[in-house]
Length: 413
Ligand code: SF4
Image (cartoon, rainbow, N blue to C red; front, side):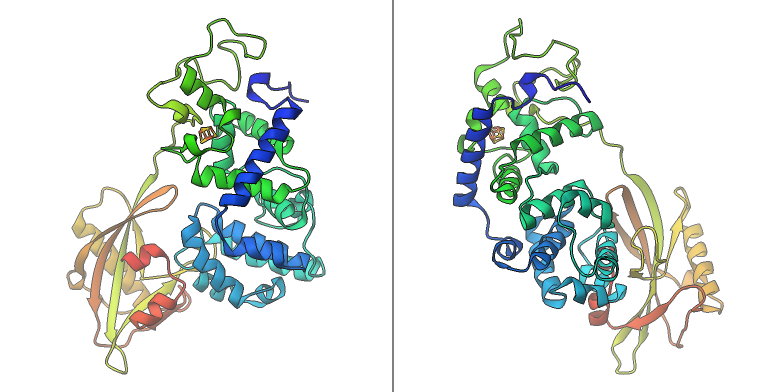
């Protein structure tokens, strides 16, 4: 078993834990946001449906703002109100509804997992965090804890980005908050803190506090319901702890949860001294040439050619304008020639590089890639069919393009 955390960085006083739970839940009851999945998690009598609703919302909320998710969630639940309905959907339909939400593998895995529940688990959702994580593809520790506590009342904690921030501030944890050692401690703490009779509400309250009060840049400490339990707030008010640590304090310099000695408390930052993260790796730079091929459709309106991406990897199965990854330091003339060669191989007839009209560049940031699309256009008189052995393709009007499973980056293009 790992050594117990230094007392200063943990909640070891049961009376304090009880007081913190009470303050947080009372605040949550007064101030929680009205979100569609919350209503369903309470009013839906069928446990599987409750679990499904929370699952969909939690997967959509990963890396995505609540305000963006609401509309996607409502449309999703209208189209596939049950696991069984989702299990019968095609991946194309899932991608179409997910278009614009980003991190597309989430929708795909959600649908694969729904099929598994229907075909292998008799349509019954696993009821504990351990089983959810073990049995459902794409469900990690956090999502499993959220579904189990909110839908089934299991007294299990959750740790997401909001909870990390709140707990690190409550207990002055300044070591790298993305390190496995710190994350493990935060899970321990979340499991100790979670309210035994209202675990789902408690977990949502802790996340809500991080999302609306204990926010990253300018936390509203004056309005915080748990400020009396917050060491970062106390430190901001009363300054550095005494040089000689008391029994509650950790050893100076070698505590695995304190900030490293090279990064002392910065009084200008106040409570935002916590949490700390190791410097992020800069995103990888990529360039991709892309060509908007246009023709007059049978009703005279312009149509555009889109092709489907491979079924695995980045933006798997989504549709895009014919595109070609480029090497970094290529001259513009060379880029154009490469793209012309690529289109020629696809279409099977000669294509002059100078026929491609340069339109501009579009930058899109994926989580780990800084992508520059070099955009060309080409108007065609003749009909064109791409070699279906290379990639599925189709002509679409502008409206059809927007309703297709295309990424936000392609919409920018
Ligand atoms: Fe966060 Fe401030 Fe509340 Fe502490 S007092 S938990 S820093 S909002």
